[in-house]
Amino acid sequence: MIHRTRRDFLKAGSAAAAALAVTLRTLAWASEPDKVNVWGTFRDRRHAALEPLEWKPAKQVAANAIQLDTGAAKQEILGFGAAITEASAYMLSRLSDAERAPVMRDLFASDAMALNVCRTCIGSSDYATKMYSYDESTEPDPELKAFSIDHDKEFYLPILREARKQNPDLFLFSSPWSPPAWMKPNHSMLGGAMRKQSFDPYARYFIKFLEAYKAEGVDIAAVTIQNETDAEQEGHMSACLWAQEQEMEFAARFLAPSLRKTGLGTKIWLLDHNYSLWGRAIDELSDPSVYEAVDGIAWHGYVGEPSAMTRVHDAFPAKNAYWTEGGPDINQPDYQTDFTKWADQFNGILNNWARCITAWNIALDEKGKPDIGPFSCGGVITIDNATHKITTSGQYWAFAHYSKHVKRGAKVFATNALGDTGVGSELSHTGFRNPDGSYAVVLANKGAEKQVQLVIGEKTLDVDLPADSVHTLQWS
Image 1 (spheres, helix red, strand yellow):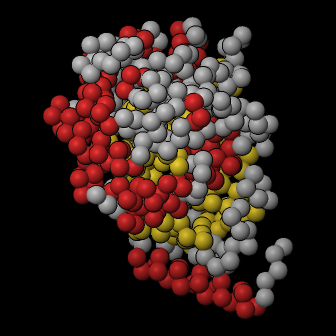
Image 2: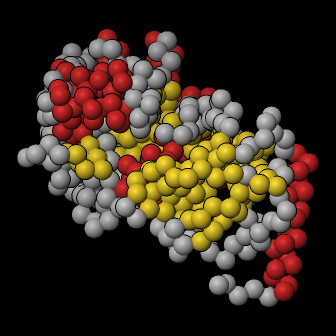
Image 3: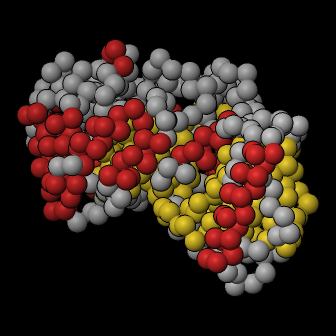
C-alpha cells in the first residue's frame, strides 16, 4: 500500500472533487452509460472478452481516479497499420492462396484487426529482396526514359491490391529510402546526399510513380520526401541525406506544384524521422511556402519523446502529425509478449496529437528477413519460412486494443489522472469518441496489479488491472 499523509490525501481529494464538479457541469449523456464491454491482454489472455462492467453513481471519487473529459476533443484519428514493405509483400506472397487468405483477412478486414493505414516503399528500403529504384539507368536520365515499376508487378502490387480488397478504405502512403543512384553525387543508393540539380527530375519521378501505381489499381494518398531525412546509415543500406533547406525547397518549389498540376490530390508529409528533430519541423513549417505545400509531419519514435509532436502542434495547430515507423526487435526475448510496452507507447503517441500509428514491417520471417540493411527488426507477424506458421508479436496484440475499437474519424479526448496516482508512469490511458457516438478507453498498466477508477459525468467505474496488462473499455 502506498503511504499518504493527511495533507496528501486532502490535496488529492480536493483536486478530484474539483475535477468532478467540472464534469458534472460540462458533460451530459444522451443515455445512461451503464454497461461497459471489456477486453484484456495479460498473462495467457490475448484481447480476450472479459466480464462487462457497469458505471455506478459517483458517491466517492478516488484520489488517483482518471477523469474522462469527453468535451476536450483533440485530433481526428486516421487509423492504425504497418508498413507493407517489399520484404513483407514477398513473405506474404510465398504463402499459398489458401494460407494467405485468412492472414490477409485477419490483418485488414473491418470485422477483424481492421488495419487501415499502411506504408509502402518507393523503390527498395532496407527491408527488400534486393536494392532497386524505378530508374536503374547507369547514366543520368533526366527525361526518365528508363522509368519502370515492373519489379513491383511480380508480388508487391498484387499484395497491395489484396490488402485493399480486404479493406477498401485502406489509406496508403509511400516513402523513398533513396533516389535513383544517378541523381546522387556518390552514384549509389547506399548513403550519400541529394543533389539540387536532381530536384526537377525527382519531382517527375514521384509523379510517374503515383500515376503508374494508380494505373495498377493502387492509389497512394500521401508521400514523404525521404525516409529519415537526417540519416545516412553509413552506407549500409538505401539512404539519402537531405539538408533542411533542400527538403523545404523541393517540397515547395518542385513536388507540390507538380502534384497540383496532375490533380492527384496526394498529400506531402515532411521529415519522416525522429522526435528529436522537432526543431527542424518547426523551422520548415515557419516558411510560408512550405507551410502551404505540406499537410503535416511524419514522425518516428526511435529517438526523443512524443511530446515533441505537441511542441510542433502548438506552434502550427492546423498541421497534422502522423506516426509512421516503429517496430519490434526479433531478437528480443519478449518479442511475442511486449504488448504492454507497445500500448504504453501508443498511448503516448496518441496523447501527443498523432492521427495514425503505422508500425514498421507488417510481416517478416523468423529471422527478421529478408533485408539488405543492418537492423534486426521483427514483423507485426512472423511467417516461418519452412512451415508457414504465423506467429503474432506483442505489438500485434497492442494494436488489437486500438484498431478493433477505434474507427476512422474518432476524436481523441482528454483523460486526466487526478491527484497523486502513486504509480508514476506505470499506468497510461487514452480515450476516444467514435463517429457513431460510442466511446473507447485504452489502459496500459506496466506495473503491479492495481485498481483504477474512471470518472465521467455523475458516474464512476472501478477497473481491476492485472500486472503487465492492456485493457480496452467500450460503451455507447
